[in-house]
Image 1 (cartoon, rainbow, N blue to C red):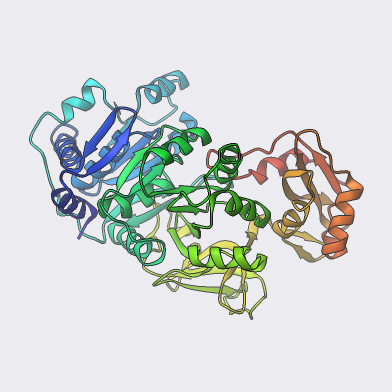
Image 2 (cartoon, helix red, strand yellow; image 1 turned 45 degrees about the horizontal axis):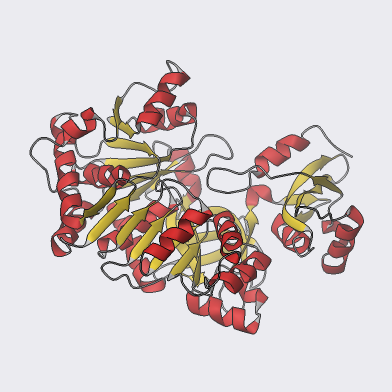
Length: 508
């Protein structure tokens, strides 16, 4: 069964329930279904979209994103959601690689593409959401289901492209349905009318977790972008709110909530992932917002589904001040297996760091149009993630770093995250990031970029002493760079490649 058929069934079942709310108003499930299936008819009739062809969705958060996504599936197409913050020329690579039949964007997106000039993106049908052209597509006979199978591609998830060009992870209808089922099994039961708040991009994690909520009759409340005050207002206005957020967003919500009384325990489930959440930040967040947190670890290649630390485990660890538990991303999700292996694929013992490999029904079919990358990532049905981690005695995963971020100094492996966790315990340090710098004798040495709280300072001597008290001497940073802010992607991830680039040419 494909997702468009499941969507249609749910729309009939929950017809009068609110389905989607954004700045333009609220649609019930019946109204959303009418809009989706009318648009699907126009995609086939006017755009000539046939099963298996691609539809790129390059939109800021809005109701029409959800309409277009489900219309593409009803028409039999494979959706290619793309972060709206990408430059048109970055979008151009994805369009050139996926070769879509049409690109749905916003009026602002059309203007950006036109301003970028000829050649920014390969030629394709360009349609602005809610334009006259968009509305005309919905003027004919609707299509309810193209008959696409569960094994057919549904979503091509392009990686962030921090190294080289992004690759498109192909996710089938079954991959996404399995992801939704593990949500119900591991994270929370979703009841009709329950709210899923979207402030992170719908093109990525938030949109993926829109699926289990919408398919269970949940109400999607869509904010155009993340603003901590707006998020808190929306949470006050709607019942039983769940939300996906990256750690940067969580930290900003904590800062905003500190100024307002009574926020502890008001969030149904705050799901976080996509980047490391430092233990000190997590403890502060639970102090302010409550313990209804769920940490997930996954990749686009196994969407939002590899390991998880449950709300129960958060509450228990918070009460017992079990910082070791909070430093993990929990155990394998239902139906998933996790192993830690060396370069040859041999299992490593408990507590030893190695590459994380994942197996289960959420794992992608492969990379779009890239058999070489597929063969490297998928070996004997195991996804080689490129992430470094270790398992504790309870089978919980401690995510250490990306393999590409590991620093090798004098033949010893140094994982930046453990150095960062130590530096963040200094009361003056707000944010930090650790990278390697070329060294003529040692190969690499550790450099820490430090952001201090306003009006406070952490001296190199203080930071050195902190590290020497907690870490092996060879892991101590050899230099500190004090900066006003750290470079981040549109998803809130620190861009370590930009920091390494800033150090390029430097050596000691």
